[in-house]
Structures are given as structure tokens and as C-alpha cells.
Length: 456
Ligand code: AMP
Ligand code: ZN
Image 1 (cartoon, helix red, strand yellow):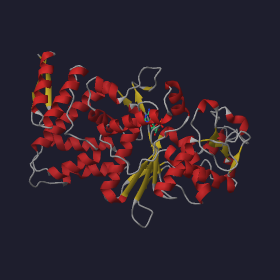
Image 2 (cartoon, protein in one colour; image 1 turned 180 degrees about the vertical axis):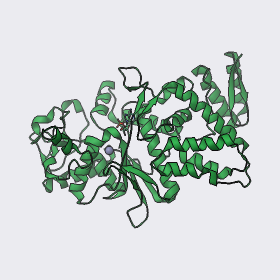
Image 3 (cartoon, helix red, strand yellow; image 1 turned 30 degrees about the horizontal axis):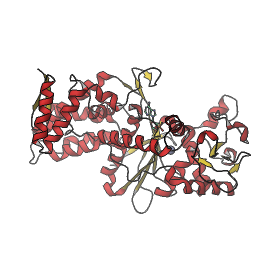
Image 4 (cartoon, helix red, strand yellow; image 1 turned 45 degrees about the horizontal axis):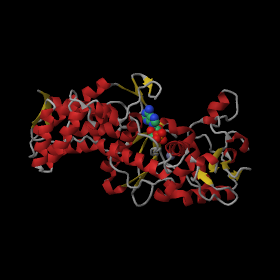
């Protein structure tokens, strides 16, 4: 049974099939901009993409999926941060890339096969811009920047329906330019492929394409150049959060298709945003959480993953701290169920509705519902290996220990260290940490697979 996923281009569900003769499914997912910690909204998108990767692997085989996710390590925000902190750009972006990886690991997201950086692909981007200039799709402005000529690509707007939308309100294509370089453009809807150096860019600059000044690439060309290099001219699936549909993805299509003359992506998928307490997450509202914020409150990363899976990826999901309490409970139930499964024999068929729900446009609420129907019926006659396949598909790691909600962060950290020492059979260190926990008025009770903290 094939996997079906909603396609933003045709606005309909479509089956996924590899389009190249080697049978490898080519999957590109827009990655993070690394200048600050990613928030849990960003992680909703990355967890959904990890789910796609897992479902694809189950469908086509683990060696028949190639997953590429970029790192945006040069743009206005990263440069501003490096200037504010008086640190080199590379130092800032490395710090936040490492943190992003640590959070992805904690959320049990599989690493992409290739994770290209924008700064590591400057020649590819410059080459593509030069090609677009030669073909008459781009021009250099007086200040040495390069712009894409939107009017030169008749297909512009097919993904976002931007033309239809604008025509309906009786105006011209009028995506408002966000930068101050509007005067440099021949047309307001043209967008930057290359941005000429400005004093605030400091030492961040590279030689530009012929006819342009030194500077740096625009954001959109990055994904066109890196997907072309690592996945070829036509990719099978391109994804991102819904806010990337326009202008980012529309612009990627224009750049890539004008350069290669081939269809850029066979399938487009956009997942919806995470809201917090019914509102958009934002710093000013004080409702923006990072994974570290939730861990400091005593929640485990796996509880966040579970809570994120409870919503349909194509619907907005309202995040509450209460949903994490529920998620911790659900994970405990799953751990008990797993511990009572008989390793011998058993039936895999009861799990089929879970896989069917995931194959049907990643219907995670239905998949979790079907899972708990089985769990509530009890473990008898259930095949343990099939349960592990379900856990793989959902990316739920039940060996990750639950944190204790009531213990302060300091105690949780000591308990984590002691658990790790014990796993490593470092008994002296484990005893020392137990002593430290006891001295602070807590006790740690161990079972085989997890521990509990209790206040004395
Ligand atoms: P950025 O690092 O800003 O480029 O964003 C990384 C990814 O997170 C993109 O795919 C965005 O679409 C996505 N994203 C941003 N805000 C949210 C949100 N509140 N909920 C879900 N995804 C988001
Ligand atoms: Zn992108």
C-alpha cells in the first residue's frame, strides 16, 4: 500500500513514488537558521519531517531514501548576531548548529544523510546565479547586487497561487519587498539572488558572479543550489513549514526551473504551525519555549515529541504544558505495555491500522488512537517485533527515561548524571552522585529501566 501525502502544488493527496531509475527517493527539507535556539514550533516542523523520513524508510527501505536538510548559516540574522556579540560568524553558527543537533538527538530525529551549509556552497550558488544571468532571468543592479526577474518566468506563482490571489484583489504582483534595496530592482516583485557587501556585514563576503560586486548569497538560492548538488535537478519531495511556501519555495522553483529547464520538485508538503495557549509563539508574548525551557520544568524531550504527534501535521496545534503531563503518562503506559510483551511469536496484524493511518497523509492522531486501542486491550498475543516497528515509525524512544516533574532542575540533572554513571557501570561515581542527591533532600529509586525521584 503506497504512502499518500498532501501535495501543496496540486492541492490534493498524492502517492509517493521515486521518480529516478535507481529507486532512491529524494527528499529535501528546509533546515534551521542558526543564530539562536530553535523553538518548539520549529521542532514541530522537524519532528514532522522526521516522521516523513521514517515512513519513507519503512515504505522504500532504509537505503532507498536520501534525506537532505540544509543549515542556513549566513543571512541578516546570523550576521547581526555575530556583530552584536563581537564573535566571528562561524563561531556563532557553530554554537547554534551544535545545540540544534543536540535537541534533534534528544527528540530522536534521525540525522539527514547530508546536511549542507550555505557557507560551504558559495561556488555552487554563484554558479547558479551566473547561469541565471546568462539566460536572461537575472540582472545586476547599480550597487552590484543581483536580482531574479520574476516577470521572466511564466510559471511564477503556481505553488502559492500568488498571481491569482493578487489579481482577485485587482492589484499587481505586490509581495512587499522587506529589504531597503527596493530602488535597485527593476520590478517590486523581483527578489535578491546576491546581496552586495555593506559595512554592517563586516568581514562576511565572497567574490560575486561576473558583473556583480563582492557580497553574499540571498536565502532562496541556497536551497536551489544545495538540493541540485546533493539530489540532482529533480527531487521527489520538498518540505518545510507553511510559512516557507511563499516567497521562499515559490522563489526556489523559479530559480531552479529557469536554470535547469526541468521540474524542480515532484511533490511539495507543508506542515502547519504550533501555537501556544491559542496564540502565535513570540518572544514579546513570553510564550516561546525552547526544549531547554521544558526540560528545566522537568519534562522529557520524548514527552514533547509525543505531544507534537498528537496533532495532525496539517492542522495548527495548540501547545499547552498540560499536554506534556498527558504525554508523560502516555509514555509510561507504553513502557509498561512494552515490558509485558512476550518476546516469542504473537500477531503483527493488530498494528496494521497504525501504519495505514501514517500512510494516509501522516494521520498521527489516528495512529496514536489505534495504538492505544491495542494497548488498552492488553499485550496478550501481540508480536513484540511489530511493536518495535511502530515505535520506530513514530520515533518514540521508550528507553529514554522520564524526568521527574516535581523535582527541581538541579536534582534532575544530578539524577541524569547518576543514571548515566550507573549505565556505564561507574559505581563509585554513581554512589557519589546518590550521596549528593540525598544530601539535597531527595532519594532516587531505581528499577531496571527507569528511576524515580522522591522527596524525603
Ligand atoms: P527557521 O529557522 O526560521 O528558518 O525555521 C525553521 C523551520 O521552522 C521552518 O520550516 C519554519 O517553517 C518552521 N517554523 C517556524 N515557526 C514555526 C511554528 N510556530 N510552528 C511550526 N513550525 C514553525
Ligand atoms: Zn529552503
